[in-house]
Length: 185
Image 1 (cartoon, one colour):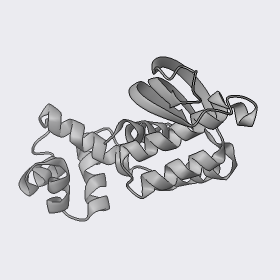
Image 2 (tube, rainbow, N blue to C red):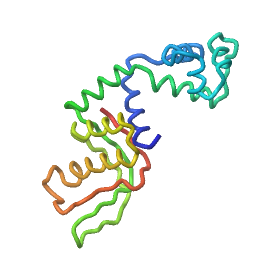
Image 3 (cartoon, rainbow, N blue to C red):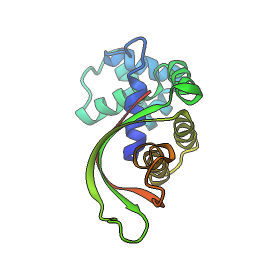
């Protein structure tokens, strides 16, 4: 997963209306219902199907730390898909998306202006068109650099050019190095 995809996943988790199962038995039961078989769950979390069945029965109660983290991540990735989808539709239809980041932002501009990339900490609300593009790219499995460019284009329009009121000579904006990035929608 790339940085943008991770940030989108974290943002979607904030909209859960119920907490996912916390017990190992509950998590394994949920994954079995979602994936259909112990073999599929085992492939997802990197253990054997026998281990999955032992977790389900309660015969094995304490998985290794890395396996427990994979189980939790697999449950959270599948939890409440309808709630996630509804929030994404709302953001793409009219709410937009807020991006908070600290990144090295470079740009290409007219001759005589500086194009030296520097770290900036920004919180910018991007219009719904960028939210739609970002969600569509994420759904299509786009690479991280493509989703970075969507965010960079949004920053160019909203932050640097202020909707066309300034920086008319700005050609391109690039997110070179991201310290952190978070989304809210």
